[in-house]
Length: 400
Image (cartoon, rainbow, N blue to C red; front, side):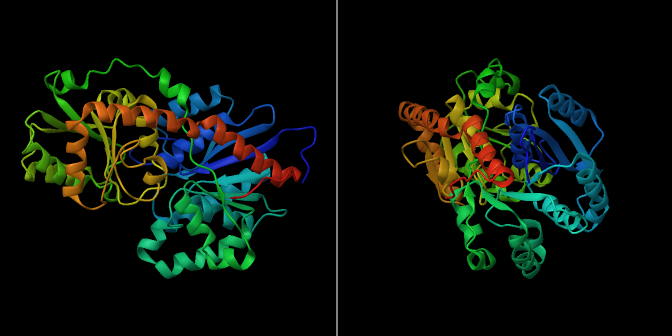
């Protein structure tokens, strides 16, 4: 392929536009990466599996267009994996009409659609896959683990390149039998965050006043999608233990998701009314993170959590579980406090330690603020640009 004298056309392909409860960090990153690629060298589209036709989507699309990024979606929202066949022909039409030179997928649904459409296209579009979790096909793996392994083996030789967003994800990709057989090595490109945009976010949130809490109340919170792997059940158990020992600590869960009703039921069952609050999804989530005494990540499975990078960027102390992805960001006792995953007692103790030693926690938060500079979206975008040029122009880029 040659792109001499014109911009390289790249489609970032995710579930849809960023929208909190239905799609999450991978979609946020795909949209941010689309905005950050150098417009002098790249013409960029954000492609979604689904369209929602609502106010949030229209607002996001308008924001993308202001940044010079087009948007297209293939089918109405339908999470049933069997319905993905409805996206194949629209994908084929998109490739035929817009003629991308690279499609960079950010989820397994996008992978399936790209694979199927590529089987109907010649010449095939170059397919780059960014893996956001160590489990390559988490939805399929949950129900059909043998099929997930088969898909992994089948897809590996058909992609131009694999990218992992953490050390654990890269190790998992490199350990695939097909990758070992072919001598394929994945690239380690961390997810990046827009540090300038985070710093420019309004700082006027007074979440304590909103919740009817005293200004001196200590506040520990989780922010993000409410689903089983995020560990909200462990956070609730930890909150109960901590609340029994510290009358001045309160808890907040910011976000929405499929598990919210059962998490709310569990909070009532544990007697946390008046001590734990649900705000739902919030456009001012970063402003709330600024006001927390400690940001908690209780996850049992992560790729590279954006919310931790946001907390690092605004200087909020962190308690996180010691799992892959989290440990790429947080060093225990240096830039935050780590707890054992799936262990509410360990989580409660880590939260207690962080709240009981505010000066030490502030020092760790400052270290984290310096550490997060390595995850600047601009720096990460330059890595992707080098990879795309390698594929299209043959300009070699080193692998991990």
